[in-house]
Image 1 (cartoon, rainbow, N blue to C red):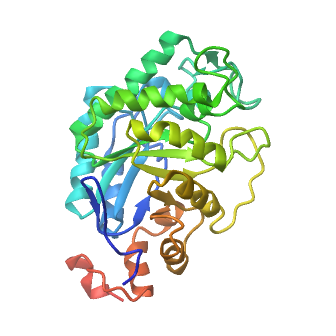
Image 2 (image 1 turned 90 degrees about the vertical axis):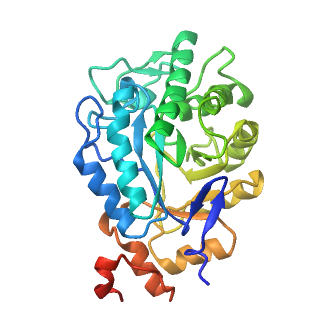
Length: 340
């Protein structure tokens, strides 16, 4: 029995395999963040291809939380209908579906928006200097995440992922490189975690207990004074009892840095965090070969494998991976004549 194609259940989220489609911005929504036919077809194709869990791209909890114009939005009740269509079509094709709730913070590139961050430090010379968030700003954004979670549940998502990675707003609070505040949201690691902890607490008031919550983190910031996997263990252990069920491991994006990427380069980070938090882990990073995915899972280095660009290149990677691992996976009836 292959581990990659074994089922797994966390709360009421039961997956037919351990393959996760990572959130990847499509920049295909209209200027108000509404989903288009593109999104429905894009995600449904991966469901046909056999992906167990599809996590929608970074979906902004407020308009100034977009990374780029064209990002999906979940800041208004009118967004629910389009998101629900994506959920319904992908679930009807056998996948479970989540959404990444996100806020870009200082990395918002929408010129018409006011750029905010924990501290007034620009990402680099091409980005504007953000305004330091007031306490009222912080409370507003926390409520925006709560309302985004409520809308996600109304749209029928099986899980939500809180985007705490890649140098976006939550990550900006967590990192000592970007958080220079002198109040209760800055300084010590406990204070830097406060924003994430309060977001999680508010989400839990509207998100059903039987549906898991995923947290995506940048486990390594690739700068000496930044966060490293051991710091993320401490951060996660502070917030996990607030309702975090699964950790999705990524890295980088907080500040410009040189990153040596190679197949599996983030797996050691996943191992450290899995061992230090005892939470289920989604891991990946240029993992494109079924045998490599199987090794990571069977050696208990992670519990799920995410694929990003590989699933853009090949929506049917899971069907082909099953053949390579000698697993008799059921193909969609209409495609069965092409089964390898």
